[in-house]
Length: 152
Length: 152
Length: 152
Length: 152
Image 1: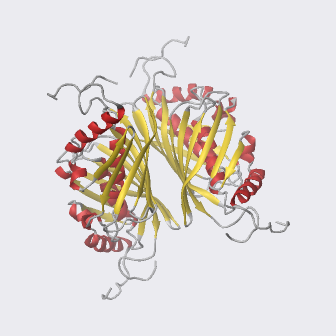
Image 2 (image 1 turned 135 degrees about the vertical axis):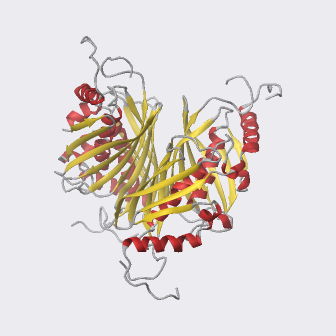
Image 3 (image 1 turned 180 degrees about the vertical axis):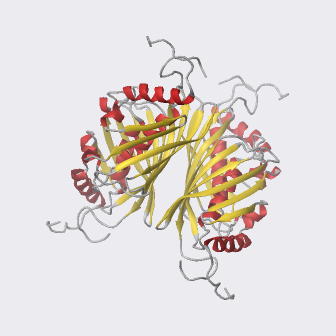
């Protein structure tokens, strides 16, 4: 990064700046029309509209795309400290089908963060508020920041 | 279905015909260039090449697409009896990163099938044979067949 | 059951009566000195003190007993409607060790309940409030009640 | 340790010696009458008979004890390299009930081991060969050995 170190950032400012830099590189999320509509330390909300290319052999949203949406909310929440983190693993329970055209929202909330490990719970709902899936992700921090600042 | 009921099919023939009819409707798998390269009762192998639209903010294959590949192998294996089944839930452990251009292969193997429930294990490897992820899916059968035949 | 059907019970009364009848048969929980210290529809809190017989080869509480505690809170919460339910599956993340003599508390909260399936999240903490484990259980209802009353 | 360092051990000898030293401290497994009937690098088989104290409010083996048996096979398999490892997390799917008096067997097989992380799959069956549960554990190595030898 050639730009100067930012002055002291609040945790919320750090989360917002991380989201901005992360999304600029996030071809997958952009290509699927996802939006990271809110961000805070350890929290993120991401939306996606189910398109035709996301339906499967049963004529409903492929569960893999519901996972992908939840996984994206997970990624923005666990990276919100400007300390790069990756998914070590995740589980998902599918509770109701997503339909073509549905506007899905994934809300990620941190449950635990200590050492290099974090646990995040994500709920995916549709435009009617119906619960579509619950997701739990486990993160592991790796070396690197999204923008340079003194280690927090 | 307007075509006549098939005569007695072997389990392998049933699996192959189910794959064909399922793939014809599977917009998501087609759109991602996936191929169901082998099928057998309770087993399926699916391949995918990591494209640019599948990379994430870390410059590597979005974990959600690795899930989606594994989930597709899971779907073809648990539906191979011409009895529709959906994913009730799944878990994935990410063991190594997928890179742009990687040719990934997901191999699904049935662990258990009784009543309406099945358990399937999927291993995802890259072109060098490196293990990228392990996935476990739980299926639930629903009403319906892919093509009409007497209930097995 | 020889006793007469209870008159109309409130959901809270139903949960309390179910806990009472369930605990009377629950040899495993009794034998481990567990106490179901609170109950409500879809919620339960269970405590256990880590005894010498519960330590493992590393000299700390065997993770299996932490699972067992969480699983017990899960069981009381998902059965609190006087409709028998069993665990279909569960996952646990171990976040800190339990020590000999620790007083552990598992709090179960329902996330989803529809049809025959429920999802419950359980947090296990020690006497200092430290988070020891997070657990997610998936329940399936089966035939039967703990005490006779008209189907709700 | 006061005894001299062992001379060069084969992987199988190392696994056997680790089992011996680990079991000597494993109050939980001993107290439940578990036996580690076979061991090899990355593999372990553990047996347990379901006793009265392990039944729950449904009159069947508490799922927590089935987890505990699987978790024990997991522990012996992931520690078989004489490098201490602990469970980071696990998931279990319950497929059939265990009954009072059942002789259960848990067989653990390593799926992956790299860096500090391992993945182990465990199958629990009863005396008739019926599959009772499938378990997947994720291990993390920590500092320490069961007996002193040069780092492998």
